[in-house]
Each structure stands twice: as structure tokens, then as C-alpha cells.
Length: 209
Figure (cartoon, rainbow, N blue to C red):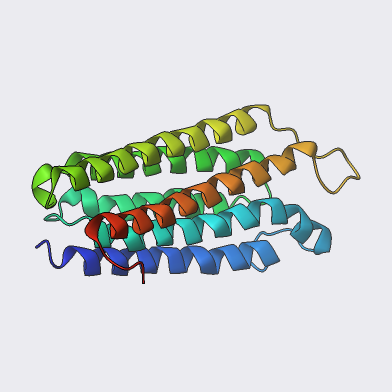
């Protein structure tokens, strides 16, 4: 059961992220039914399309290293989590034209992401690792991911609460710049994952390549 866990998870997450990417392209370009036409609408979606794309890449990357570092017999909750993340992620993509709603969907995504990391932490047992040092290192890393995801969720909630649309005749609102901070948070998470892999190789005495 533990051996099929990585392949099953990667297949599931690949399908979900592929659907999310296709919907993101359609909604960003305005080819989805009900989307606003015109280049102004495309430009207004850009501050939210970029973070949505960043989420697709970040979630995919997190799962790539996740299945390499953790293995346990899958349970029902493990099957639910990739789809729950996908629902929140795709829900936001449908609201690129309504930033306030987009931000609230990303609050939900942060909650789902924190729950996913909590599930990993709950399954991160000493018996999975060859040494106590390795177990403690991985547990600390997952704890950091939980904190970072909650922080992103709080950031999204604050922006969602106070967001105001752009004044009539203006392309952007000052609040649209908040998406830069959100995208930076995703870059931070991806950088942490890369550092985790590097440090794990060092602890195991392996070459990074």
C-alpha cells in the first residue's frame, strides 16, 4: 500500500492541476462562457491570474517532493485532500473578474492547505525514518509549512475583508498590488521546499543531483 501511494498521489494531483491550468487559461483570456470581453478585462485579470498560476506550480512542486519524502498506507482523507485543494483552487479561477471573491476562495485554499500539512504531520512518525535526527528535521519542516500556509491565509483574509474595486475609469485598484505579496508567499514556499530537498540530501549523505 505504501509503495503505490506516490504514484496514486502524483496521478491525482496531475489531473487536478491540469484541469486548473486549462480553466485558468480560458478564464484569463475571456473565452469561458460569461467572461467579460476586451483587453482591459484581460489586464484586470492579470494580478489574479499570475498568483493562480503560481499556485498550480507551487502545489505541483510540493507534491513532487512530498511523495519522495513521505510514505504511508493511504486512507480516505489522503484521497480527499488533492480534490479539496483543487476545488478551492479552481473556485478562485472562476472569479478572476471578482477579486474580492477570488481572495475569499484563496482563504479557503489556505485552510485546505494547512489541513493537508497537518495530515502529513500526523502521519510523520518516527518509524518512517532511519534516525531520530531525520525525523525531527522533517517534523520541523512540516511545522514551518503549516505556519507559512496559515500566514498566507490570514494575508488573503485581510485583503478580502478590505478590498475595494478600482474607481470608474481606472484599470487597477491599489488593492490589486496585494497579489504581489501573495505571489511572493508562494515563491517563499517553493524556496523552502527546494531547501528542504537540499538539506535532506545533506543529512542522508547524498549528492543533490
